[in-house]
Length: 270
Image (cartoon, rainbow, N blue to C red; front, side, top):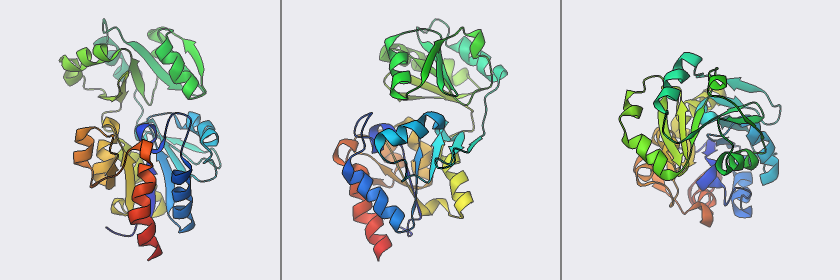
């Protein structure tokens, strides 16, 4: 393994112990890495706008060099608030997506600015808005036909499985679809992955992707882990572990810190 110059972490099921907490051990490991000149960033399916607020809640607002949101489509400097956005889906891309979800029983949703917009008001979407400290508004499907960085379908696990088991995802050419949790489907630009966001930051800092360590646990982390020094959590999906170069402890057992202490911090010190 080359000396590590950049660390990138997914959040839910990876760096976060729970939705409100990053453990002290993980924070100490991040700070030790940054003291050694290693860049540290977050890469999430969430909106980077929402994440800027959450960094303070988690106590790491001064410890993050960059935030990659919307699975690679939004990059933010958390210190200045400057945002860059790429890989937009246009209304013509979203219309067939909405048609494919007809009669699925799923609630359609989208993050836009500081608000979560959804076609229904229910506990699941309310929790998503609350967890990200966002406003919430119910809108029509027609109102969701606009430029978007990420589109979502929210609902019961069996409704999501039924949709994924149908031929509709394979027929959808205007977006890439993946499950990123038991209650959530995400739709993004067909060429987008978290790896694209990581590549953007590597180019900015003058690093190669084999000098970047990434941590993840779910479907939307696959390309990122395969394209970098990938570390899967013990609680990761089996195919995510297959894509990674290493497997560490779970998010509930300080998996990020465990790996950094064993490999990255020791290597950097040497």
